Each structure stands twice: as C-alpha cells, then as structure tokens.
Image (cartoon, rainbow, N blue to C red; front, top):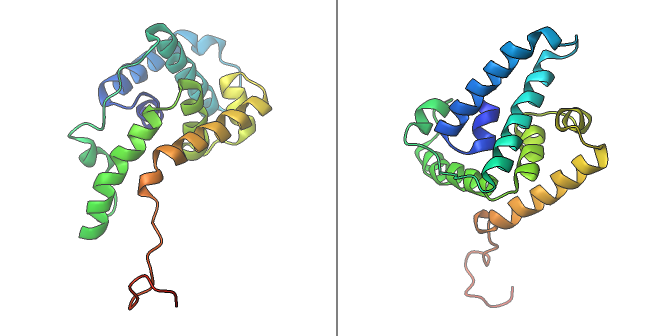
Length: 165
C-alpha cells in the first residue's frame, strides 16, 4: 500500500501521510467491508484519498525522490554502469509521473506499477472501462513525451563518418 501511495504522491512525506489516512479510513470502514478482494478495496481507498487530496490542493507540491530512496528501494546489486543509469532513470520516471494529471497518474500507476487489470482499475476508480483505457493511453503518451530524452538515438555504424554505406 505504501508503494502505491508513494508512486501516486511522488514523495516520502505525502506517501506516509496518505498511507496513514488509508489505515484510518480502513479502521473506520471495516464494518462496511463486503467480502471481495481486500487488496482491491485497499487500492480503491488509497486512490480515492489521493484524488481527494489532489482536488483539495488543486496543485499538489511534488518533490523528487528523497535522499533515502535508494535505501528503501534497493533490490539486487546492479553493475556500476547500471547503477549510474538507474540513478538518473528513477528520478526521471518519478518526475514524469509527477507531471501527469492525478487521474492519469492513478490509472497508469495502478496498471503499470501495481499490475491491476483494466477492469480492476475501473472498479477501483469508479469509472467506466473506456475511461480507464483513455486515461492509460493518454498518460502513457505523456510519459513517453516526458521521457523522450532517455530514448536511445540511432548512431552511424562504426567505421563510417556519416557517409552512406
């Protein structure tokens, strides 16, 4: 749940606040929980609280990854070259996510990071399936544009100086 909150909010402090709000909401609403997927219920509460927060603030203050992000997200040890590339990729991805409208970000994060199906996302966000598809498509298009500078560029073949081969 924290991972979802972190990806939605973009920084540690807001993610911690959102996670705490989710636990409070779950505690208060547990008696009204109807049998189903508990994880889906948590996702719905988390995204709804995030969207409420975004609407209240109109413009949310987003920060890049905190200094302790590497420690929290550390997995297997990458090669030095991969570590250098990753050090620049993660902030770029988070910055690109931060640039999305909250509705697009929620749909993209639930699909591409949390791995939910379109149907599960529609149920979580309380919108139609077509709306989910549209938000994911538009969100991904905006992410591609924001991350275009990371795309590999075609170089001329080795041994040539720009002449045709």
